[in-house]
Length: 405
Image (cartoon, rainbow, N blue to C red):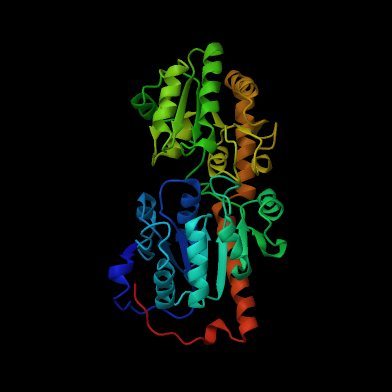
């Protein structure tokens, strides 16, 4: 990973690069720990370097996930100073021109979606796309962002129901909404024996049934329901313990709620972790309690690890968690039903195992990282070829000046 800021590195001429591959700039606010950010890192790591030269622009800080990027990926950051920093568009346009970018992809809604697309238009970038990963608050498409719809070549949805949402609720043009299904690394997330030492280090009894959730600690994930399920399950399975993996502004409030509900002794707040595959290997049941989702990465990770999932019926979750096949669905907020399904899976190891086996098979067939990368590569090349024809030019004949990183 090559890290640069606007003020310093952009003033320095970059080293020569080959002219052939398409140069793609991904826009984000910061590479903090989250599902969309992890997908972006996986995508960039695997893009075919004979076809693409990926770069990243973070409007604010770099973020911890940037450390996982390959050494050949430049990361530029520190562009925006405050919400109404209008000169940011000129800074970003200058970056795009200097880097001779062929396509931009903004990741998520909000400021990066607005400033990234506006700067790309100003800089004359041929392809402008926006990848969206959520449905509604807190990541809905604002009125200002909708104003830039005419300059956007593609809005990338993460599943077919998500595409319908973008068309029907966000009022995006159907011909510009494209689907690239989320995909995960099925080798990293795979069935494996539970690590007894890790379990002991977390203070988990060897015979305790375990349920877990991996999600940012924010309102839309509804950890309140997870804690209520923990309370109800504990009444019927007194040895049960519960893992909460993730960090966020609601942590202190949720820890207090766990104390108020009398489950603080069996609910473990683990924060952000780099060993999520090993943690998933320990649990018996994965829970998703969200009010709002598009296609959550954590569900794919749990299924790929061979774990049954009990999830709320939101967003595109039902496309992945086929009810009774790889897990169970409950209505949003229905803690009683989720409790029943969790107890059922705690009590029936054969059922849990069979659901897990089918879940892993489903992810391999439909949601591998290889399929996701192929989808992005094909889409970007298709869009660029279309724009090149419109402009009466071909990418392979473009004359470039040497650039640096």
